[in-house]
Length: 180
Image (spheres, rainbow, N blue to C red):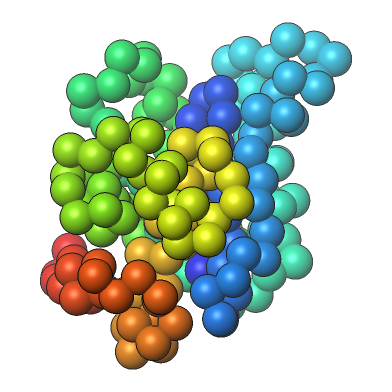
């Protein structure tokens, strides 16, 4: 089983895959794909490129469990564009797994990651680094915690055993085992 975290963004989607030992198996950001495009990617072309990047990144994995960060309703981004991206990604993930991705609200993700629903990006990055994550991108750190959320949800006993940061284990188990 592989545990996937997707932090969707029109400019830099974070994607993290954890293996059955909660180790990083694959890390990717979509910004490089968009910036490397010969054509300035906007609208439907950008959505197509992002969808293809997600599909290519995950095509070799079987038995996937996916957590996807839900919409930030207080975001300054354009809600219609984010909705379009969400639909494209959710369809791609459904086609890869045969299931809807598990949607985790931004507040719930922060509560899971550091124990506070109002955590800053800096706090999320610092906590991810304390847990051995090597990257400083807030998009990747969110995706890392989404993948861990999946792991806790699917395999709580093993997650508690593997997670070296015991101060948050009980909190994480409670959050992931509540009905959504």
